[in-house]
Length: 126
Image (cartoon, rainbow, N blue to C red; front, side, top):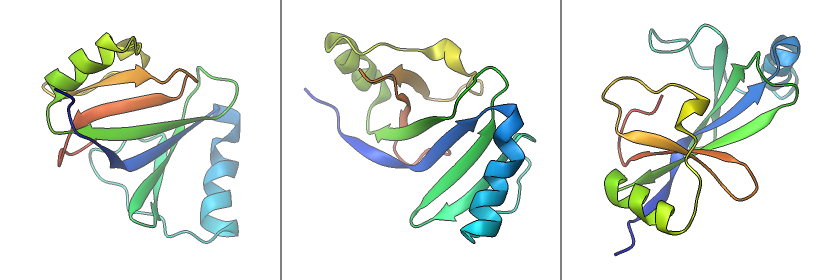
């Protein structure tokens, strides 16, 4: 049986360290998007903005040399989703970024190497 998949609330842009401040300023100052107040769960090297019904995260990533877009996909059954994606030869990439202990989700790469966080519907994503 195919698990249900839906877009999650989060879109992340991983930005090289040397472009982080300018990128945050672009979304805040030039485009005028409303920046969310940092929370205790938010890493120091990230900023988030209201983006329609989504949240746009700008994350400093010192290990990359060009920006990457990462997407969140939610499912009703993460175990079934993992098995389904494995049967379809979709590569997991759990070592790309640590997830909190006990978090019911995992990372995959699309065939075009777009990173996706697959997590439980209605979960509090990272």
